[in-house]
Each structure stands twice: as C-alpha cells, then as structure tokens.
Length: 481
Image 1 (cartoon, rainbow, N blue to C red):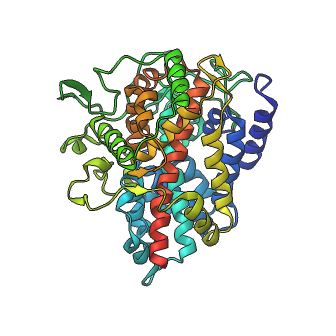
Image 2: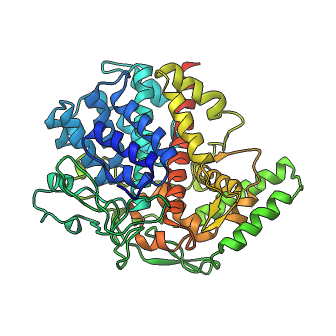
Image 3: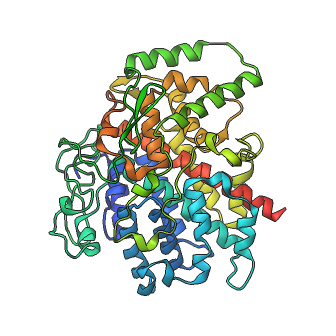
C-alpha cells in the first residue's frame, strides 16, 4: 500500500470497510482516485442507500443486468451480496424461480442492454399496471441499477478484470484454487501506484486474506501470451478489407496514429475557425454512424455461436438478442436519431431521476462530469497536453453508436482523432464486451500508459450508461405526460 497515493489509500480503506474486501474493480479504478470516490459513493447508494426497492431485489437486478454480457465477475459478486442481504437462495436457480414482478423487468433489461432505442412508454406502462405492478420510483431505481451494471460489465471486460480467488472458488467448487482454472482465467497484474504505472504481481485484500491479481493474464496489463475467451469468429471480406467477426479489432487497418500526430491534430482543430452548416453537421454524424456499422460486422447466423457458460445460463433469457447497429435498424428506420438538444441529461434526465428516486441524480451527474472532465494534462508521457478534444471525441462516438447526436459537435473530429482500431475497441467494449480480448486491448493506444487506457474504459462506462439512461428516462417522461 505504500506505493499508492494517499487519496487512493484512504478510498481503498473505505471500500474495504464497506465490503469486507478490496475488490479488483476498485483497485483498477484506483488509478483515478477522484473518479473512484464518486463511483463508490454512487454504487453504495444505489445498492445500500435509501430507495424504493428491497435490498434483495437490487442485487438480483444487478445479476440480471450482468447476465446480458455473461459477466461472471459481477454475477458472482452480486450473488454473494444477494445472499448476505437475506435473499431467497431459490432465486439463484434461475429466472424461472423469481417473483413475477422481477420477471416482468427482464424485457426492459434486454432492450436497454443491447438496443435502448427500442424502449418506449409502452414498456413502462406494462410494468406499472396489473397485479405485480411497479411504482414509477421503483421503475427508475431498477433502470439506474440495470444501466450501472450493463456499463460496469463493459469496464470489467474492457480492462480484463479478474475474479478474486476466494469468490471464484465459491462460484466453482470444482476449481483447483487457481484463477487460471477459471473460464477466461488470468494471472498477472496491477494495482495503481503513485505515478500511475503498473506494479507486477501486486495483491488484493479480501475478507479471507486471499490474494489474487486484479487483471487477467493475457489481458490488459499482462505480459503473457494472448488468451481468447468467448466465441471467436472467422474473417469475412467486406469492401476489400478483412474484418474479424468475433469482436477482435479489424485487420487491414489504417496505420495507427502516434501521440505526436494526435497532439498536432488536436492543436490544428483548436485553431480552426471554420463553421459548418446544420446540414453538413448532420452529414458528418451520419458518415461516422455508417462507418461504425462497418466495424465488427455480425452477420445473421453468428448468434448461434454465442455460448453461455453453465453457471450463467439460468440468468439469461433470449441470448441471441444482441446489439444491432443503429444505422442498420432496417424496418425500424422510423426510429429517428436521438437529438440531445431535444432531450438531454442536463435539462431533462437529471431532474426527472432526482424527482423519482431521491437525489441519485446528483451522484450520477457528478460521476458523468468527473469521467468526462478528468484530465492530468498528459498523453502517453507528454505533459501539458489539452486532451479535451480527444475526450469529447470518445464520448460522442460512444453515444453515436447508440443513435445519440450532439447537434453542436463536428463529428468530422472523430475520424481526425480516433484511429480505426480504437473505434473498433470502443465498439467491442460498449456493445460486445464479452468478446474483448488482450489482442484488442494491446492493439490500441500503444503509446498510452495503462492508467490512460483505464481512463478510456471509464469513459466507455459512463457514456454508455448515460446513453441508456437518456432513452429510459425519456420513455418514463413520455409515459407520465
């Protein structure tokens, strides 16, 4: 612990006292103590603070949400918390054993996780009517939990966070006490240090005193050979380029952009005074949107290769319902682009969630702003760098994949600042996190420190969560009016 900063150390102590362990997600986010502080306060509030939902419901909703991305790490953590809150062990046998009220939430869980633009007021109305009806406050609490754990699954896979050994043993009694025996098991790793550089072979604290690396070998911070987990697809040809269907970064990429080039592009963009018409801005958004649809193509039939692990399958219904590019929504083309000028977090979502669910909007707002504005004015070892344009490009690109457009943004900057391999990684982490591999992680932002890559994954988490909440809260508002 002597090698980490004082703020991070104190946050780790608080997290340990709250949870009787220092879990690996907390350790990895510890690279960024300012963000970790609000993350822990928010997560603690929605799971343990005042709110309309019973505590066992909260943890089971978290299990349902993590199940959509087959995130064993979060499922096993929340199963343990569920039982500690006095949850009925029968529920852990699967969705067929849970109360109808919880079962009714699954449709929203599925849509929100993969195609949130399909959510409408009829889904909210269905929950609030009938014998096992939900209050609007309960619906909003559930929506916040679902969005949180969908997005946290993206972070867990994007950073290759490994399961704690003692929890892995509890979840898999036949394991041989080794993280490497776990599906996708990894073995090397890191905890943040004062200068945000990784330490090899650091350990985590737990209630049992068991130590285990927070990140997978063959994952982000590992020095070992690449290890794939989840289904691996075969290359297909598209427009003369070879694309890997499985979620691996595209082959045939443009040359990766170095940090010096990236800094020069950011500087030239900041000096540019050119203004574009509304029509040109729309075209640029649609161009980036259609380009995103060309990445990680998933033809019909690939869904059949999706394999659900045995200890997760009981929490997953309709596993073939996956992300579909907003730009390719086909017969659903009548669904318009979500324009932030018409419904935004600042002007609409924030106040609605605050009104229906205590003051959770204040925590969410602080968390979004912290992730978006977080900067140390460094980039790949260079100092005194204004990274605001790069951060905004990442945030807006993520929300673009969910059909959300910021009218005041020039989406031409996305192609100037985000190399194609980075866009492919972001799309995998957002939309198919269970398919992210070490190769994906290693192939992007090669000059960046691990702490900076963790920051990119925090932006994936928050921009995705905000996108889900915008669609869900708009549906709630339309139901109310």
